[in-house]
Length: 279
Image 1 (cartoon, one colour):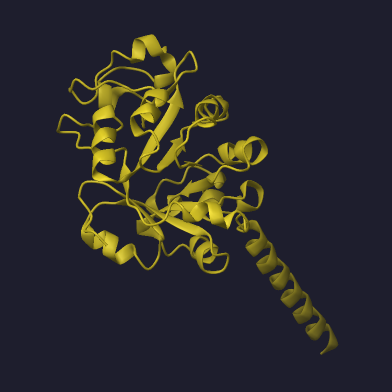
Image 2 (cartoon, one colour):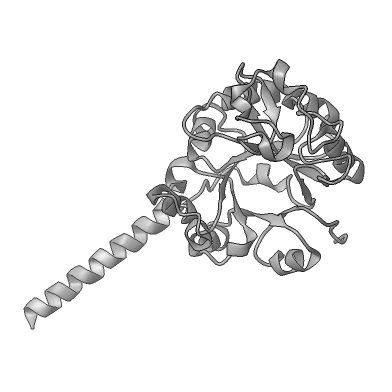
């Protein structure tokens, strides 16, 4: 009987330690809350107020101008060219949007600036030109695109943003980006992007399990978690919002019905393919 009770105590203690470690692992930054509040109360147009079958395709100056005019915040994507110029473009490869071979990082800015978007007259914009157009009129969610471990985009972007007078935050799927900002730009509001990688069939290794379950938060300390709204039930995401009061961002909402269903689960909404009803 004594041996059984001892074994039971050991199991209980181990389970309790594992639960404690889990909640410590997913713990986001608990301070810096005041800075997050400024991003609330506005919808964010995914890659600008765009339509890839119109004259204002995604991540184009035309799409950003439309979003600013309509009063929407903007979510956009930034990566660097071969010569380290920050440009606004989502995919690492150029084929889908520009019909060109290779990756953005294979070309210099002088080469990229002549590539048109979705068959329109719009071209790949520099990040600095987007900042001039927005000029602080609406808040920005800047997603930094880092495919592996080259973090050149971080100092290149921050060099432009340090003198920018408008409201902005950064986010990335790559936790190394958040680590860079924790070390070199800790005052900047930062967010961890994630998805139901295992649930959606995008599993590519153990790192994706960690990212889906936000198990690197202890290291990156995000101010918010931006999650695919279709997987809002992932426990780690829910605990971050309910237990730690972390700001929750939903991507990408594509209908009014999806928006209404997500309201009780998220605080900020990135939308695409429809115009949200006014609150």
